[in-house]
Length: 384
Image (cartoon, rainbow, N blue to C red):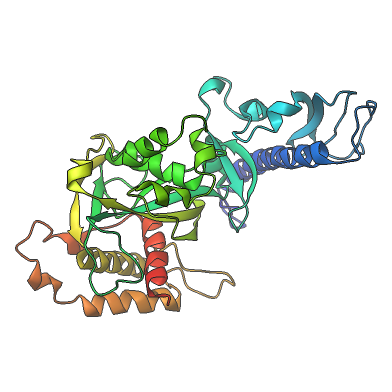
């Protein structure tokens, strides 16, 4: 619940109405996720046979009520659209079992003018990243549902690995345009994106790096490596791409970004940029105002300074207030140690790179979500 209000607030009634509306929408959304789970359980249950007759499986006070017909082609469900209002809807079982999600299940929760043919579905996951069900991406962001995503570190000419910590090459950084609705003008050291329902993490990575930077080698490798299988079937094993001379690494690790505006289980990759094979990076002008390869230690130092400013201003999203004991401007001890260590060991970078184009890097403000993944990246590199 991200809309808490204090007692006695003069605007409490209005905030309460917003909070109740969000709660109603959340209940209705989660009930549809539960229905998807229930359908999978019923469909695989040995208790269900083709001779079953139509019957009710729930009591009158439940918000989920199923009805089965003889050939198990459809299921009728009662869903709560408010705390005490119910509606009866019917769907085909084969549609509800689709790994790509079924947008009509959520149609009554979306604006009336929504074009259902263009709805993008995402997976809701648990803390381990295991898929629970699928829902429209619009509801993922509106209700801050935990979902799947990827982050890619684009490296110049060689992958960064845990086995070689003595020298890191350049990383690609970019600045978002000032017209972006979220985090305008901020910097990022990751290419990121949200997985669509049923999409493997490595296919998401291949798609996002092609869309954002024009680096389409992984997608071309996928398309050229199979005559029959779909791309999703080909990359069901995320390590498979490594046998195809792909510039994408295998999945390196997962981390969870959990803030008041975004909850995502992120799978992290590296991408080895090769000038002879990739040609030039091309980004969308409406998305990116600047981008270039930057020495690793500059990125490391600039990110530490950016986190330090967020902490000092009470805006760092990684406070970890599990028990409410920490102040808003605190960060956990591990993160603080990493920040201070990076600042100390890179303190002389001002003099080393002062004549380069990156001379203003010490004032770069990075996307907070990207910084949370960056901290996980640093911990992964240092974990022996």
